[in-house]
Amino acid sequence: MTERHKNMILFVLVLGVMMSAIDSTIVLLALPVMVQQLHSSIATMIWVILIYILVVSVASTQLGKIGDIYGRSRMFNLGFAVFTVASFFCGLAPTDILLILGRAVQAVGGALMQSNSGAIIADTFDRKRIGRAYGFTSLGWGFGSVLGIVLGGIITTFIGYRYIFYINVPIGIFALVFGIRYLRDGLLSKRKIDVFGMCILAASLLLISYSAITISTVGLGYANFIMIVSGIGLLYLFIRIDRKAASPTINFSAFGNRILRNSMFASFFQSLGYIGVVFALIMYLQGVRGISPFDAALLLVPGYIISSSLGPFMGRFSDRYGAKKIATAGICLMAAGVVVYLTMTATSYIYIVILGSVLAGTGSSMFYPANNSAVMSNAEARSYGSVSGLLRLMGNLGTLGSFVMVITVASLAVPRAVAFEVFIGTSKIVGGISQDFMVGFHAVMVASIIILAIAGILSWTRGKENRGG
Image 1 (cartoon, helix red, strand yellow):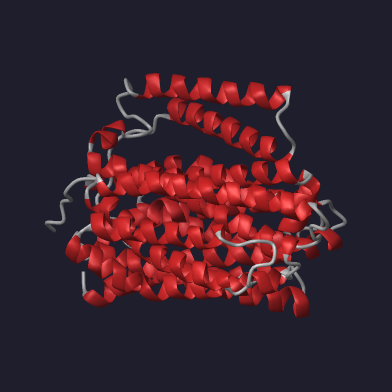
Image 2 (cartoon, helix red, strand yellow):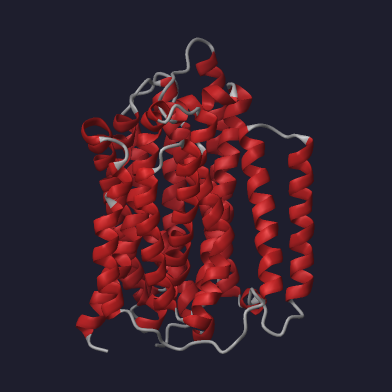
């Protein structure tokens, strides 16, 4: 394969990452407008965000393994197609329920791309250069996030919220054409799909994820308690069955490799410890300080720019020096950014947020390429898809748990309805409640620092990598 061909493959993967990143920030900024124009409620429309996280979390491992069997590039291109078509129907959706259903289908496309992109990188680039490739996908995520913020403000203000979904259509068609032309499948697995095991795992993750989200949005009730206990029970049953299966859904032997195990759990705790910080920070900026969603997002732009700009360079450093030092230093910088947020009060100098954003952005530019490359460079070639999907699962479950943590803590300080209104920028915390919220905000920051410390320990103790080629 020529160098030009490899670069075109990387270009297609970066486009896929960028599409997902644009969607993650652009939808958030449009929520208040969608609530109004679809005559919906905040409690319902918040599922436009939650359903995407939920479906991607449930589907990641399954679709990664299917990519191992039927072709990672084929599944990645299918993901582009599903994401693009679903985006078009999201734009057309006449009601809130149809929009949420469209987002669920869109998430299937996103999961197909997420769970197979890492495997395609591992197929295409040798282990000495895999970090550089992940660095460019980090650039795509950071650039897409910034673009989503800017486009979200412009489109919702001057054109109409439906075009935040329509914008994915030309990008998706363009990327799909290039994907079909340049992506090729490497080594395929001859294993069969464990349909029974996949169904049990999917049911387990669905019950746990849905009940966790519902607990954070509605509160702990009898039905939620039954669901989460049932989900945990099914997960235990799945592990017992899958360990004995001839062709298991999850390759549990991967956890026997300390590098893979520590790297995956580092990804989980990093997402659990940091993604929630962004949620809490948005509520602080919009609720306590009264800043609009667009202006609040702009304060975070420097961090995204730093993250995307440094990603390729940090990826090269991880190729040269290994993931242990680079990824661990990145987590330390992210924790330092959280410490900056911890010092803030209801009347702090507002632009101190930029300092925390830059520190955390620098840290993420170091952690993601290094940690992802450590996983894929130490996985077996025939299991690239399932390992990539498992890595995405760990990160997505961390994201889900982080959201639950922030909403739960925030709702202890202010009513849930107010917390949601603040999160999407339609309300402001007033009076003494703002001080109560700051107590919860600081509790989230302390919890995040502790969780990031766990991620740092896992990262540092991952062991010596194999980057021999």
